[in-house]
Length: 267
View 1 (cartoon, rainbow, N blue to C red):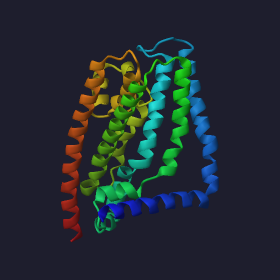
View 2 (view 1 turned 90 degrees about the vertical axis):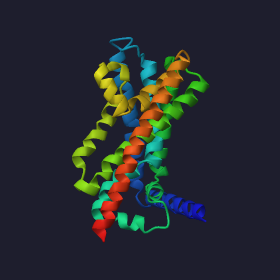
View 3 (view 1 turned 180 degrees about the vertical axis):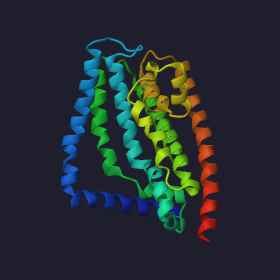
View 4 (view 1 turned 120 degrees about the horizontal axis):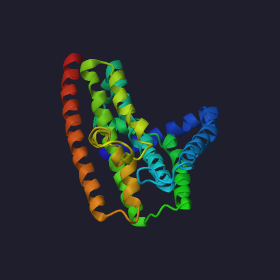
């Protein structure tokens, strides 16, 4: 019975998303300009950089474009499934969370479905496809098994990032708006474009444990390469699961403690 409820909710949300596209077609049509423009500018930027050097910290132009492909693929899943943590702070402050808690559903799953945006996520698929094609054309040596492993590692990286955002937004139970703390995870999207190898060791540790760039773009690009060792693949997966476990536990504790504070305040 509960599963049917979730499926009906998901169906209604998808209908609403497509209805908004029909209602505001001009906004939708602008994506035909902005999306290709962003893609071309990014490719031009990296082409310009590699016109002066052949390799950067062991990464070729094909490798970097492959990294960009996984980043766009990651945004597909982020925009479709994991946008909801960004809205949690506003829901807590505005009291909208009361509506969520009153539903006969798990509140986290309900919020995930509520902000499920298949339309926005689909826009990243053509971008990811173009980047993958460009990487292959430039000579990226990948295997089908590697691509599958890279995609799975990317999913773990997106999940870790979502959990971190959820933890930060949960602090609104105590501090109200978390705009300044939001800068912490927004910094993630600033460095996710670049290979982890270009940063010094101390920054690498930060980008693995606290801003998991390694599992969103760098790691997936590496494990998809044919010559990347199996031990490295296993190590990245093991480390990603460890990081996910630590952040998930912290987020769960914050969420449960925050709910008790929220319900006590509401009563």
